[in-house]
Amino acid sequence: MAKGKNATVFFCQNCGYESSKWMGQCPGCHEWNTFVEETIASGVSGKNMKIHTGERKKPSVLSEISLEEEDRLSTHMKELDRVLGGGLVRGSLTLVGGDPGIGKSTLLLQVCRLLALDGREVLYVSGEESLKQIKLRANRIGEFNEHLKLFCETSLNAIEDSIRNEKPDVVVIDSIQTMYSEAVSSAPGSVSQVREATGVLLQLAKGLNISIFIVGHVTKEGTVAGPRVLEHMVDTVLYFEGDRHASYRILRGVKNRFGSTNEIGVFEMVSDGLKEVENPSEFMLSGKPKEASGSIVVCSMEGTRPMLIEIQALVCHSNFGIPRRQTTGTDFNRVNLLMAVLEKRLGLQLGSCDAYVNIAGGIRIQEPAIDLGIVMALVSSFKNRPIDDGLIAVGEVGLSGEVRGVSMIQARVQEAKKLGFTTCVIPSVSMEAVKEISGIRIVGVESLGDAIGLL
Ligand code: TYD
Ligand code: MG
Image (cartoon, rainbow, N blue to C red; front, side, top):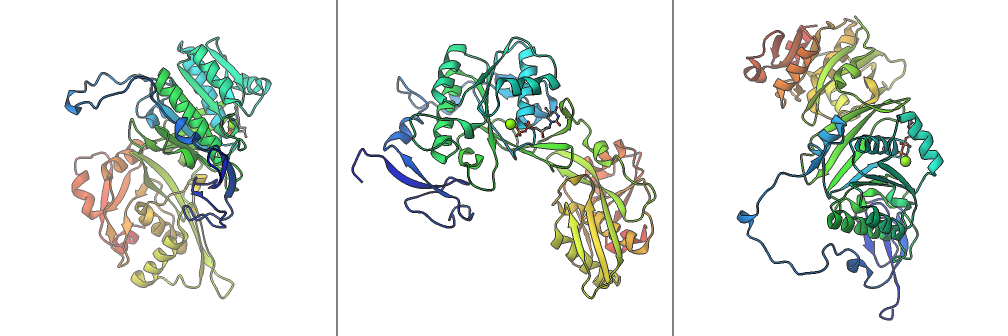
């Protein structure tokens, strides 16, 4: 192709992999049928991604750099501040990703409201909804003051001008996939457009010291570029997760240049927006049946936060030759493995039984620390013997039926104590670590047999 003319390349809309020819499967992320042809004006990328213009900079000596107090704004939402690492950093670019309809716009509008009430100048740019639609949503959330301005626009140039004129403290771009820059000829939502738009916003954030939130939809279809293509450009990446049918939502930090990514924020979707859930354990345990067999409470760590969760198991006689096994919220193969351990090590005849394991509340847990809970729930259901309502169990189960240690045992036991549990079953190797905790009976178990003996 002649120099200077527009060239076309193919981009994977899922991960941003670039290729000169079309491919069925992306070598980067192994998704099928995600390549779309896009025109790139030669020389555009790079020119528009430059952050610093003007005078040249010199390298600095690291030990001589003075560290003034990091300039953080509180969003007045404790859960969000926690995930951000203690507040919103000035001049940072934050990506908020998630499935459509999970509550990204609602959360950010609430944050805008709180920041505006605090006297910050906030600009909310929506490329998806009209002013009236936003107003309708805002009415459900509460009173707004004059510091919050709305802008319905998809042209990046118009947005850039507006930001340069207004110089707000915080800007929300909802969503990056609707933004359109004239410098790139491909359609809004394509990889080159999304990258270009993010590049421009990055310059604005760093140049004018504005904190910018970018909303990005996660899509499976690959018709619009997923937020993954810009994860590396932004400072912080937060993903909103949650089951569509459950009312709670989890905001998880995936990348954070200003804090840890261990933290999660828990919210509940109610009729007037998202409500912070300060005690997720209480929330997850509401509705737990009393004196029912096959139900047990376990403690799982979400980042640095312990969360008590109910596990339910149902084991019943199978009417068909091949027993059915089903799990919701946990790993199917892990449950099969634990059942095999039960058969081999304890001699339970589970081979002719159907088994269903469910993590209540629609949450997903992969942590091995819930193994002991799963096993105890299965045995409780199999023997039809209810487990004491005041008991919780944590521990990983090994193939020889041994109960192995888990991380952060103190935090887990403390959480159980806080919520009024009376007995905590833990691996005996962890007994040493919790010997100072009083007010709760702690039972150390070495093997599955010990644990089952407690039922
Ligand atoms: P929304 O913020 O529009 O999602 P996103 O921007 O991630 O696509 O979320 C909207 C969903 O939340 C919608 O299905 C309705 C529900 N909702 C409530 O339950 N209560 C409320 O107060 C609001 C504003 C929305
Ligand atoms: Mg939205």
